[in-house]
Length: 194
Length: 228
Image (cartoon, rainbow over all chains, first blue to last red; front, side):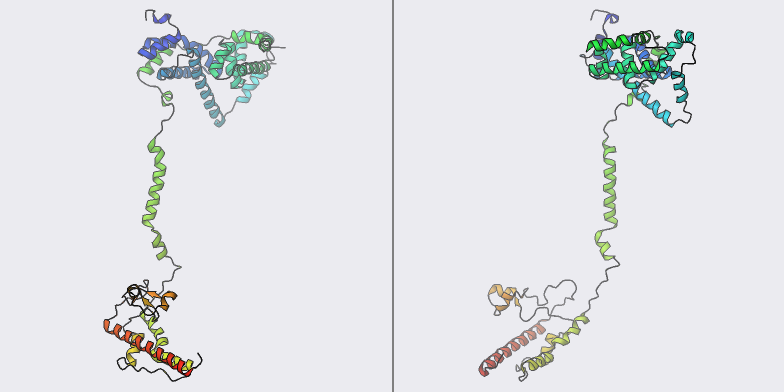
């Protein structure tokens, strides 16, 4: 292999890591995917610290189970699948914890998202607040729709890639994306007037 | 189909545009350092656990415990002890006296009296000088708890096999007793005692004399043409 590792594709890098256990190849893949995965998991879970742990666990899982990757799949879809599964597990864990917790402030949070009539329009126009409102609304969307909307509209993945990551038919992916967008639009009706 | 989805995208174009413009979240600066430290220290946390492997000990432990309990139960409480110790079962006390009481029904004198009463004829007399009446009574009602289980109508198997048996009618009736053991093989409730040969000899003689008497009586009946 004459090319430097930095010029190799993801698939060749993981092959190098699988065949020769080259830690440099692994580190390169971590560098390439740590931020996209962080963004995806943060939009899905909504907590930065938890999100960092989930991405770390994703990378550890990749390190431990490198041989389970098969060359016919794209590396990006494989690593997104791992991260998505870990993020879903984290959500389930949080939901269980939330059910048994005494101080439940979910009602207050939903009010903040849905009742935006009190906000002045100039403040809504402010980018930072708008982004925060969108993020909060995103977290209110059902997880099955949220995942595909994030992958499509935030991570810019193709339908085929999303179909591989979620192990769903392309038609199902498209309809779920559409439903997710409709839900999101309803939650953000004060910003987007049809 | 694609047109439908394209029209959907147009409808939500503003939302999609805003979603794309959301700020990209990045990992903390020490992310890689922490990751490589975890890998070097092999501190993989909950990720390493993965799917639980099949554990034979865990799998067989409950069934082994149940089997041991069953074995212990059988050892400590065997089934027969339950029957023996059952308060509902009252053991029957069998003593030789119980049998001795019955002997009065078969005493020689009473047998003769019955015969006399039934036939309304002269009573049977023991004419055999070798066998006294007292010995006949003794044979039927043996002293010292000695019992004869075989009825006079029975035949011996050994005799039957060897062809010496004279009382062939009893074979048809199924009255067959075992070989030379005169006491027979009775269950566990009777006191088994070996008959002394002297008593046995006397008993046989008595039976023979009774049989002869019966034959004579039959011949007399035929001669006198008496009704049965």
